Image 1 (cartoon, helix red, strand yellow):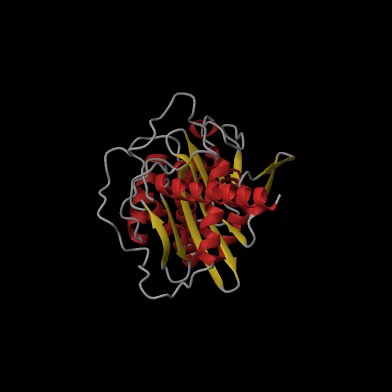
Image 2 (cartoon, rainbow, N blue to C red; image 1 turned 60 degrees about the horizontal axis):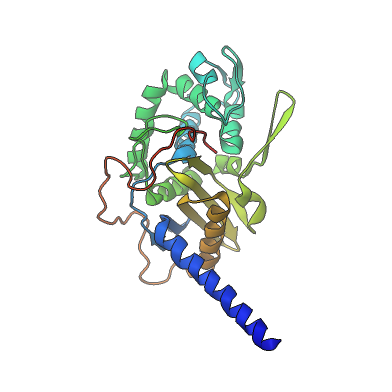
Length: 299
């Protein structure tokens, strides 16, 4: 019996090793210390990738910036345009002419990734989504996202909308450092709209010890993306996983990376800062999965 137990243990170990090796081999990822920016691990962190709904992290960053400049308030009311009302799921279901507050829109993006609320914010701040995208790109460069191009506020498919795991880690770190007063919105798990409770589908928030927040993303072209942050003791880490095959694999790899990260020392000698880049140019189109019809819903 003990021999068979040993065999099963060996096979389980090999399966775990297979997952680690293969997931790390095909999936761009990075994990950094949120305070120092030291990179704990990375792989293909500068390969261009479709951000999907991770785009909304920048939409919210720009919103936080507008709030800090007193150009908006959380109570500011915004009117839903026809374009915003026609956005595909996931969304609140806002109708043309419906009024929503900035605060409600923020939580709609962070909690359920509402595409209609993203467009409402964009149009209210910049006059149009196209102008807002230009503001997003200007802001991206200002925070150090050198290999990212935004084309819309939601992350809905656009072949020219690209990012990298490194740039998303830089953005997440900037949110925590520059707008800590709004960081809590990324931990929100439920939102009530028109009497209906809408729940976050970010399994990371429910299942990882020390989970603090951030954002999921999915399109057919991007695969399953996740920016995650967690704190254990005095150490806070940020991980980015792009292009996982399933939501389960996305969570599994994120969990594994964070567990490994918390075992390391953020100030260990030889660790590079997140701003250090590899020589991977921004290409015209990411080289991974081609968009397939019927897969444009973001999650």
